[in-house]
Length: 235
Ligand SMILES: [Zn+2]
Image (cartoon, rainbow, N blue to C red; front, side):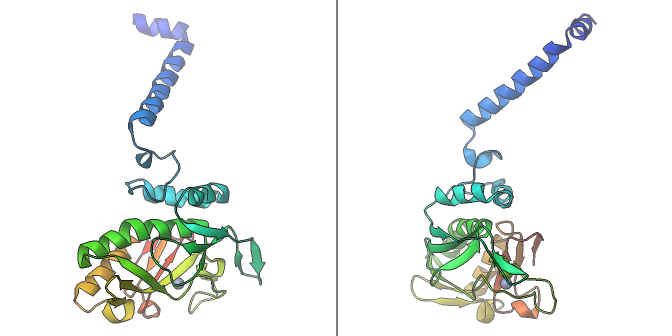
């Protein structure tokens, strides 16, 4: 009763105490919790992923400046592409050409910044650990059908995310000892290769907004489609 009348005469004190508690909480979190667990610290490509990493990847879509600052601090070699509209429905906006990563992508590939960030995180923290788990060796090369392509989604008139360099179609992998793994040939073969493909497909969900594979439809029987578009799905 006494306390209540004290604060009702001085409401400012309550607000002051609340701000002080929040400020102390933020100070404590900054000092003692690693950045990769904090939602308000920038994403770092090489940091071990946490429960908050996929949220941080999705938040890259909000700003090209922020997204490129994340790529600039990583070990990726890339060149930023000039924005350009192509035709009525296609073009590059906030895209970069990947020159070098930790595996070979078989030449330069062009992707929008958040898709490239998702790809680099998937390559380092999902693809390689799964390859080492299943085959006890690294992937040295990722095979794919490309990223940018000015076209509609098969069977529709809706522009594909490939029209904005916001998607990649991955068709296979080569391991260090030369073993080739193909989505078309090994997805359902019941061997370690099939097990590996199922795991790497699943691991991309969340690193990308949309992940589609052979179980989705016949158009995807020979590749995984990853994109950073507006729809969230994993099939
Ligand atoms: Zn695709």
